[in-house]
Length: 393
Image (cartoon, rainbow, N blue to C red):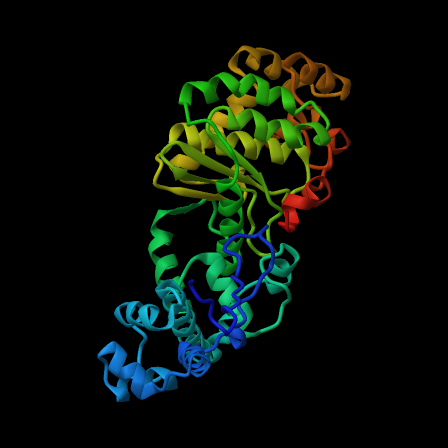
């Protein structure tokens, strides 16, 4: 009959790789070297180390080194021990692997202890609020969690990786954002998008959905907050709502996760429906018009100066007010008051009145202080508390 080891198996708990997983932590103090289990097993069986050496064909010195934890208990030795102790080789291998993992973790903790200052680059309060970190403390444990969150081995590796990524990033304006907060926000969005179920991307399907997406702008936020992601998923686009971290200056972002799945991440930077819906169609423009290797990070899409940003702006403007309404819009632009004219035109096009106000303000047909009561306010954190906090599910 196969024996069970007298010492308990090592109990391990893993650090979650994505926000939303239960906040677990590795507990190395529960792991003992396999030599301790071997010593207890030999004592229970009444076998001396010298006798075990004779039975296995190994030297007494090597057996003693295994017991002391100075020598590795190899898979070959595990097979030999199974024959003598009747404890399965898989048990010995598991004990050895757990012990070696603990040794490496302790070595890593010692190395990372001098690098906890790297945490100061990040918005720790925001990361704690979103469930990435349990608190905002500058600890080795939090540094390990953050490295696991980013999927990198060490702070220097992360810095090198991001320098390489920067060549593929396209910012829409020349503002100077907090790069570390930006990377953290983008990583949160990417991880959330990866878990979204979408059909394979089809360009024609996304074009076909444009009228339905435009019509959502006239709905209450409580409705489009679920309907917009559901619609876009049918065309292979994962839409993520994620309030931006402080000093990221982000309205939205577009990134291809795979050749068959794109991500559009949206913030509520201006908390007005005209800016929000222009950003929605601006990001859709990036998906439809531009390459799959670039990541577009849009601060204020209206202020974009690159060719790609101008193309996305033109796409958004024509998607929200299609060419067949241009003549009517020109009439409105010449005489936007009383504001019932704006409401009537918005109803004709099938969009929110606030979008028309924003367009008229941009075209200088209205002062920036006029018509703002027709714009709808909204707060993503209030509309999507579970997603925006990345609470454990």
